[in-house]
Length: 447
Image (tube, rainbow, N blue to C red):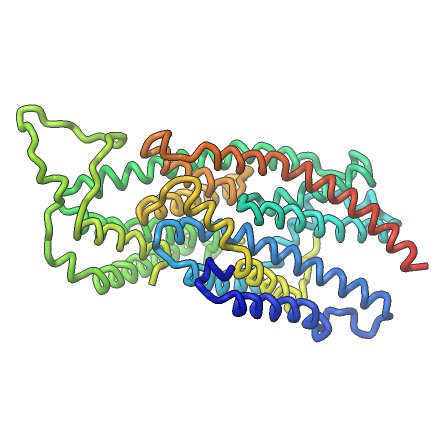
């Protein structure tokens, strides 16, 4: 941590100690800590909150970190800027939208009525599933492996349900969808990012003035992305024409804002109207070379390269039964855990995504992020089993493949894929082990 953030070891230790003290003491000030109930119930609630924090910490260190890896690896954001940006956005997401995910995780994996009348076993199993998923996420984060949090928790809950409730306790369709996503997610992510990056090289790099081409392309990409997200994920109206009009308005506003930022920050270079040095090289006019989408195009140089990287760098952030009510202090508690994990260990997974799979530049980072976001959004709307983590890894591989097979580090990819394959069985094994230990402790505790 000290080396990653360029701070002293004593400062890093102080930050870690403050986070640890906060994690151990803040639950006592939360209204959710079983106020008015017995001491045993309060103690169980305290342990549950600590394990929830542990899981959130590892989500921040792994799942959130891999989302920022392309921005850091491409140089669009520094590590400090990425952590600060993700901290604000992830805390807000956990606090404002966390109930939607908790509802899915509670209802979509285990058949709860199988455990009817055995509430203590169900409590022990779910608590152990949290600990098991957190344990594997921590191991993966230590080695810099970007794994799916969803797969971790599903594997843990499936292991508990299968051993302690039998085959009928598991929604096997959920497990089948997860396994199929191992293939679907990275393949689609790689294909889309490959095409996006080739599109950039064909229509931006080969333009007479790549800087101006990039500045013109950026608002269009933002318009398409924001309009799609606004319409598909956050429709502002139930009426189709009105929802479409509102989405188009959001996309237009975002495109206008990005265009203003680009013109303000890079306008002095755009006004120079510099030619593309690579397009001024001598060539044989008698044998014109057609340029197709898959043609390898020489990139811009000098000031033109500065403009292109600047544009795509800004677009990455430079300068998701009955309703389940989750208390706001619990949502904030989870947000705090996510931010803590991202701060302390997030740099490990960020390094894998941003540096170890393939070399990233602002244009390659943008292609990977744009492709991953588009695939996750539209696949989710179509009901396809998609993992955001696997899609992003596939997208990063895709921009590497666009430059040649040798541009992707096979050893890193093998390690990542192996970690994906063992995630569910390892989570299941740890969950069963932890459940056995927890039931023994709880039986003696209750007695």
